[in-house]
Amino acid sequence: MSIGLNRRGLLVGVAAGGLIPPAAAETPDIGPLGKPSWTLDGPQGAAAAKGLAFGAAVPSNLLNHSAAFRRILARDCGLLVGNNEMKLAVVMPEPGRTDFAPADSMVRFARAHGQHLRGHALVWHEALPAWVAPLLTGANSAQAGDFLHRWIATIVGRYRGLIESWDVVNEALAGYGPIHREDGLRETPWLAALGPESIDLAFRLAHEADPRAALAWNEDSLEHAFGWVEAKRARALKRLEGMRARGVPIHRFGIQAHLISDQPFDPKPFRRFLRDLGALGLGIEITELDIDDKAFPADPAARDKAVADFARRFLDVALDEPAVLNVVTWGFFDGDTWLNDHPDHRRRDGLRQRPLPFDEPMRPKPFREALIAAFRHAPDHSAARARLRNTP
Image (cartoon, rainbow, N blue to C red; front, side, top):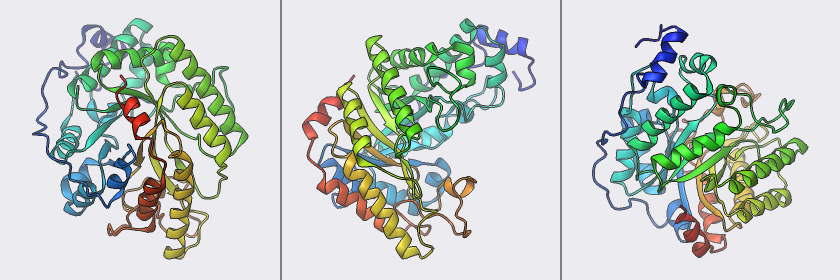
């Protein structure tokens, strides 16, 4: 099938299963499981002593072409997640064609170095190939549900038993600005095709595809001290309570933690939110930590210190909570950050952002030391975390 299919052809393809080839049953070439490569004196070593895991988002192009990048990942990280490698736009760029090579390369590296894996992300309003939104627009609920089933079965089934946790839904709630729905859900092609039930359905399908994987809802804009953020936290908790009451197989909640230097952070309400999540019996993951430094000085040394200080203030609060299991940075060195490409995050002085633990030449920065210090000084909740890791 080609991109040029009309809507009727696409819908026939959904009904016939032709849009997604039966690749889930294939065994990927992932190689043997190696011994953990991370060192005791790095971030993962410090995290592991408290029952935590530390890691980073990984673009496969860098992983496959930069020996220096592979070295710092192997030494410092116990957990990896793909940037885009397991998203629909990469895995199924055209109807009827799948591409697992980027994801497989990341899985092979993690396996060889004894690292755990997160899967990101099954249902998101972005990273959709051009052919999917028209398909969902023209599908009835049964057809859209069948497509979602086939997609989740394909990607989750391929890596069954290899992924510690999956981001099943990503950024499901509307954020800053007008809220058009009483339930606060973001308007997306998935929501339009399947309604609010699409969230519960996605979790049930993911659990069916891999009953051993922990399943997470990953959400943005929950960290800073604004009224609309507090309202978003309340909406998240209300929906989570409903999902738990309905028996939805949700095990974790992901907080992205894209921290912004010119926005306020108040530890008290954030700590309360973490405790409320933990009280629901959910594990918590910090999934996309970085620090937008646009309000910090131009001088690199002063800026790096301010970034590290902000990261430490945030982590000191987060790591107090026994339900927090993982801390993942979105990228690992300053040459691999999305912030320089986003108009809302560019610095006014034109300098490049320095938001991550290593600088552009991959030299360690104070942020890395702040991670190690935060893990070492965190309370030891290893027993509680071990119990949560065993769910499901």
